[in-house]
Length: 446
Image 1 (spheres, rainbow, N blue to C red):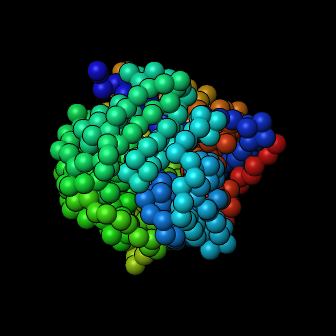
Image 2: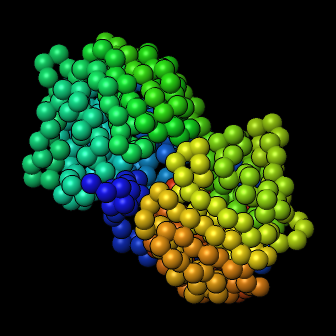
């Protein structure tokens, strides 16, 4: 099985594949030409928050999550999935707190009509299998297993003794009598989702589970630290080898979600493109070392100031630099589109090599419509800086591409209309309010 098709589809594991009529009609109107100055509070990390929500299935006690991005569409979607399983959920939008209580799991079936909305729903499989010893979870989109990255999840569960059957578009998993068993599992390629799913399942398994070639993302470390607070025994977080010693029972806890490093990096790229100075509140540089280096090389000022990050570009426009996306601690593929947009106005040229996903340049044609000079060849793109971008009507294709088009609109001459902005609602809390507060001319329209 080749890496490319797996990674192409894993790009969509967290992607909402449904489009409601209302959100599908919403557009974003951006008028460019304003520098960004002021404060932006960074939300809790979406990619950590969703996995914490799934982990609530592992205990019959309340699980309280602070710094939760509770207004995100993905959080609402996963809440529907969990509520169908019996989880009681309260989302406090005013205080950014989520309380989840799976006192009694009333169903072991995650149905297609809910799972189809978000591929990350497959992450209920491990917790259900660990606690209930049975789980029926729809394959997202009902696609054949061979073309899906979930095979890495399922092979891991089989190594832990589970019986897996595929029937009517569902993964039907059953643990042996006495529950899952610890296993030594080596991933053939680094998979964030499989690492998360199997780590959750292993917390209640019998004996020790070792995950080799495991993902190392900060969101996985955050998930592991929350599980440890619940009573799990986990060692090796942040390394490629994680050891989990199964326990009989996990308890509830309170945990604060880490800041969203992708949102942080997005607003850094916005400053690089537009100029000005932003104070990004409640976030961390250590999650973004692979991004900070090329941004500084390009001519930006960045520093940590307590719990905030100061990012500034008030002088000459940025210089062209080359980057390559890689598994963490390398540069996140989720920041590639934003960085590319920043380079469209660079002095000189830069090259971006995408090594994680094979089809992550879908934003390029839309940027070219706005006047960008970009040449794509294979998994690399050469961006030659132009004097200006021009506003145009464009269409978002996914979450990160949509925010890249917002960034382009912030600096383009005239008006930019961005269609299909429902993608933005999945991953960026209050983006219009946040950007308006620092000087941007941006609004949501019908």
